[in-house]
Figure (cartoon, one colour):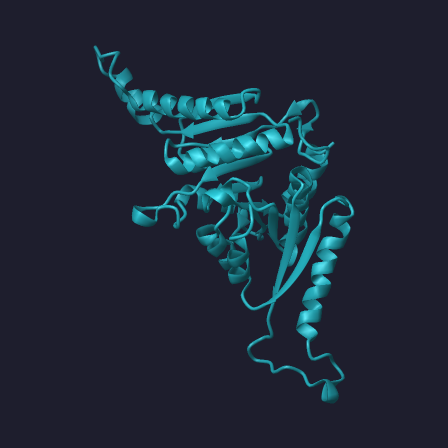
Length: 317
């Protein structure tokens, strides 16, 4: 598959890869499978990365040890093995896909943030602890999603959701992050041939009562109407760029996080935005973002708002 005309492509003549971080765990292998399929859809090369501090600590120690045994299995050997197994799995899944690998002597968050600078997106697995290991999100995935300058996809959820069995993408539409998230979701919908459900939550402020139309002249559902107008505004311009994508608009009264987590059970991908606050070094995740990343039943794409126009202009044909 060479990719859809709407797929991400290149900056100049350099094709930017899709990067996936691996650590040898089962969740990271799920991330490899997802990343392989995504790279094929978009016609992108795949780069498989494992980050380890072996060189900084173990490598220096061995170098300073006279007569060190050369056949000792080191952390570097293990790191190379992790990457090699992941690459072999990727090649079995997509034999013609261009695959590169790297073992980076750095902590995982710093390494993947550095890799993100020259990537279309970064993919990670979910990593938890104990009997609910795929419910709780690992610190690497959470930190990366909160700080990356590029979209980050955390591959989590049930097998049928990870394996694209539903034909649906859900995007949360809220605030200043909406344009980037909507564009990403519609582009994915175009490439995959999926429907997109755009969700906007609304609620009346707790300190206000519902206005009475006979007394105020205002609609009884003023807040809902306002939410509908914001949803239309976020969708209409971008939707024209992807006329073949069927978009369903959903207004939900109540919690945005509850609405998105609930809808994730019938989705193959949940897309949400991350905004950059003044004084912070990277995109920030609010309560909705944290909840979705911890409890979604499908993979989650976190798209930074400032990335929107630059990524679309630079990477699309």
